[in-house]
Length: 138
Image (cartoon, rainbow, N blue to C red; front, side, top):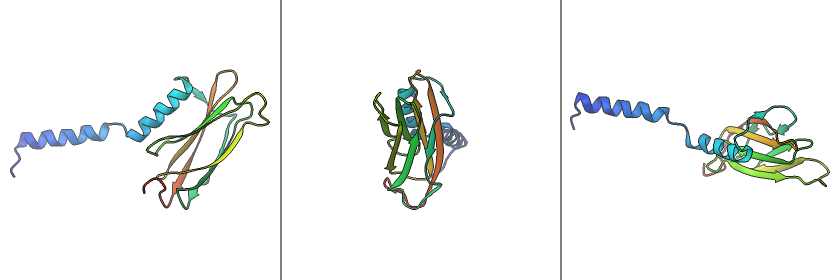
């Protein structure tokens, strides 16, 4: 098969264009966060996310999130095929606004926790978890 100079340039430009496209998983994570926050900006502080630095197995990664006074907390795994992991809603009778769970991570990625505070503001915390054995199909 012989490629002309024009064909080679078109293939090269197409490859460069493909590299500039956003990663689908990251775009899905941003969409999930925007749906939860309604597009509002997120601040920092007032929320604590505890996750291991290294997870030996991505199938069961323990995560704890604590946001005193929060009305709801959302967990997002940015590199998973389905990034929205869980949403916890707290009523007025809740003793504390804390949740602990185990999540499945496909690969090394950021875990993000966003809390909706009673005044309508949002705060965010994140942690990077290195996965040595993948949990979601890998």
